[in-house]
Image (tube, rainbow, N blue to C red; front, side, top):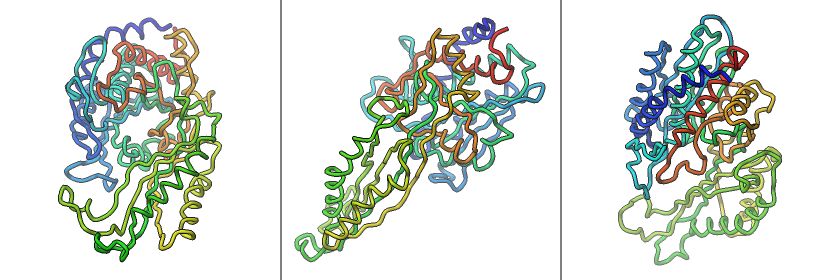
Amino acid sequence: MNEKLLKTIEDRVDDLVELTADLIRFPTINPPGEAYRPCAEYIGERLRKRGFGVEYIRGEGTPGDSDRYPRTNVVARFDGRTPGPTVHFNSHIDVVEAGDGWTVDPFGGVVKDGRVYGRGTCDMKGGLAASIIAAEAFMDVYPDFPGAIEISGTVDEESGGFGGVAFLAGKGYFSKPRVDHVIIPEPLNKDRICLGHRGVWWAEIETKGEIAHGSMPFLGDCAVRHMGAVLAAFEEELFPALDKKRTSMPVVPEGARRSTMNINSIHGGQTEDFRPGLPSPNVPDWCRVTIDRRFLLEEKLDDVKGEVTTILDRLKRERPKFDYEIRDIMEVQPIMTKRDAPVVKAVARGIQEIFDREPEYVISPGTYDQKHVARIGHIYDCIAYGPGILDLAHRPDEWVGIEDMVQSAKVMAIGLDLLLCGKAAR
């Protein structure tokens, strides 16, 4: 093993912990997109001091972007002494809301018992911090390295990534010849390599009705009752059919190796328009649900959509006055990077060196920004690898282990050495 490189990382444990805690103290909650710019500037300023060229790129015109909540991304690049490939570490800086049930301040950056606690420690500011430490240590040990290192902190991954990686990919930030290899430090466990993710189709279904006085509902047409028929058909037909579908993809956890659909939200009627006011004495003339359908490599998107529209069309034929509209929100194909891809082999070597065992190769149950790197940037040498336990993401008292971050940083540094210099030991 490259003992000097690993020792350099071990000497920076305090810096790694402080960096992680500092990142947590930026409450980058999405939605609406709080504290994006100060967090991006904190990252950029640190990397600027290390000699990186730093850019701040606002995802103008993307969902949620406004002067109050600008979608500010940071991209930093350090070019080596000679030409060579570019390795890009991409982390999202947005986090979900804290929610209830915490025993520590979710944005306090609390450090205790070998862990850093807070919203986003696991998903994924611990991974961001580990990648920065890995890159800085590598640069110190090998100041004459060839190629380039990029580190980005991007926004809105939790809501689809449109103001972050999707926007940047559209501008060429995740395309050849600028970038060759991408590592996304999402929390899939420190001895796993995540090759990709299932597919996703988000859509909104709206049932139609006719408004009338609530005391005489027979004079109107209740859109909520129509939606009830839709949900009943899903329960009786669609969900049992999805349970029977299985994939050869190594998706974790085991329950996600089948097709799934989640009803994300349901809204309907006039009462909601006046919340928190009084109920409205009207028959609801609209009702909407948002569906989150996750599908497998073995499925075709047209068939996935057809399973839903077949039910809706049948109800339109069978149910008096039933009418609907359906609107696509997002669609992403399943993706799985090949196990012999350069970035996979490099990180696998790092895991073998640090943990003395072969990595486990997995597929994420949900999508992350790899979808945009591949779909828009056409970079397929991309994986997710980082510290943190996936099951802790989005939960109260979220944490990341300090030793896990240190070990992951070592793996990333070895991966850098292989990808840029061609060997991990001297």
